[in-house]
Length: 111
Image (cartoon, rainbow, N blue to C red; front, side, top):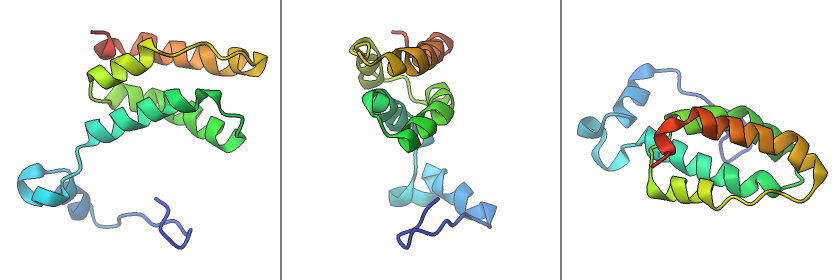
């Protein structure tokens, strides 16, 4: 995870992660991982049209994981259904096959 100074940091003590992902313990600070992955999956669909190579790489590696663990919501379903094929040939060659493969493997988002 990248901090405000631009440097990376990570949790070294597992109990902090355990605390944050347990709603009964963390209360206001609870992190619902399925909701986070849902948002990342939706945002990855929206960024399929970008020409930024860094974002493209991030999407390609993250998308399968995000869809696999995302909360199956109506917003995610709508994002998948509303996806329009990109016009740029590079996008058709690289991005669309990955997107379709992820959707095909993510049976739980099909309502």
